[in-house]
Image (cartoon, rainbow, N blue to C red; front, side):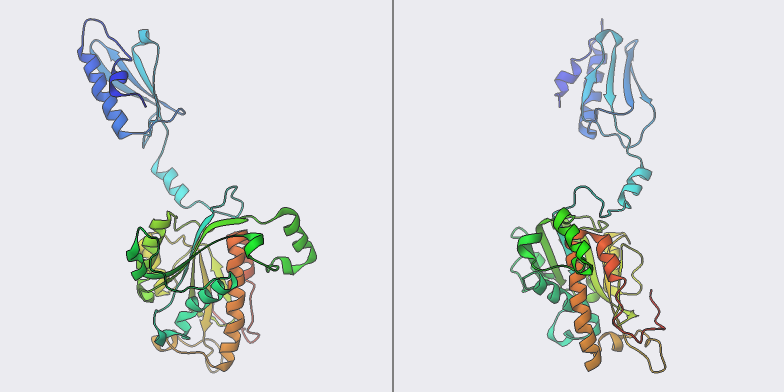
Length: 354
């Protein structure tokens, strides 16, 4: 960008130095306050009778100035190209559908597996997210062992989460067919011919918060900030948690919505200030005598599975890890389609999904 002195010398007015000084002040203010764009409407400074006036053609909000260009000297005008950035447009962008049709998928992703940290919580219904995290790490050829730091420049993050960062591509690191390839020979052939939507991942970050369930947002916020990811990008950020209102044997994957009473998810929605956070909910509801599901209460959340439920959850967690694998390489929509059709519990006739 031109210096203030150069900007001030763009226009010379006869018989007065005052307009030039005013122009220098105006140019410095514009240069400091905005960034410039070579497109869209005009902001025009007029110099007549030793006075400076500004005219917007048309009116815009949120100017971003990137380049100042003088008009012909005899016209005594300075024209600045500006770009419209209205609040409404910004809101629409923040809620944009980051679908699998995106032409340039991010090579950096974050998966938050929710649960309560510590041995006494292992195997409880509320720690289904942690269990799926371990299964996912195993599938991807890693383990979620504690790290000395999240990144070397921010060691304090190790106090709020356990983290494993992976780097791999689809062919070299993930062996065997995925759930889509297994559906039919045609699906497998399509993968061989066309590849997958996101074939390379430079940074896969699997995180298990140390903050206890109800404060999961304290781990999510620094992780998102450090990785420079947007919480509402459904193809880059995913939360995996239990849901006691869904029967064991089912999964629910959605791009957003309320927390449904899941306190860990609620904490994340609060700190990110959006409900547009993709989530994979693991059904952990317990059947009540006489049908339906038991009422959600702390004793149920911290309760353990019986032998039949453990066997069922073993299969569910394996399937959930495969769904996350689909999400990594094929995007949210493909993963959600497979997650939402799972129904391993054949007695599931009168459940209530939220």
